Image (tube, rainbow, N blue to C red; front, side, top):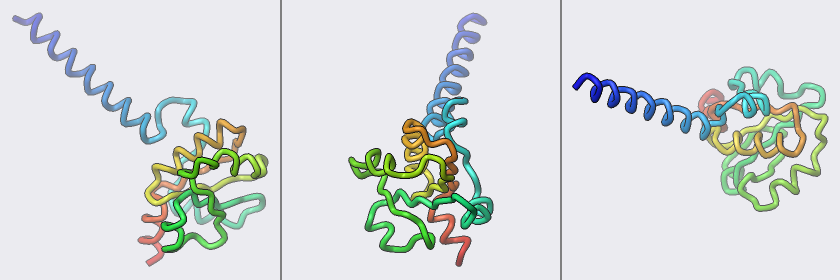
Amino acid sequence: MKSITLILTLLALWSCQSSAQQNNEQSGHANNESQAAFKNIDIDEFEKMIGGEGVVVLDVRTPPETAMGMIEGAIEVDVKNPDFVQQIQKLDKDKTYLIYCRSGRRSVTACNLMAEQGFTKLYNMLGGYNAWSIKKE
């Protein structure tokens, strides 16, 4: 009986660990590789970096979303556009990119895609434009 309880406990722990790992992978915190690809920063740090030398703010939301408002000076490159990779390949890889979307999920995708193309100075704004808008009210 104790053996069955131990086995069930171990299975439950393994299941929880697998679920947590899956959640981390979906949020862009999967492993050292994705952590090295970009850095997550909060709104305050994002705002401090805006306007710095060689810094580009990149809005990766859809056109209807950007039509509702965006961070001043941001460049629009929709990560959902099938040509996203071709569009980012035209950008200067030596610059620093501050990337945001609506809530912070698509910007993780954009950061990973950009890292695959050789970009090394990538910063993802946690909370996205939703959090930015709330802070600016």
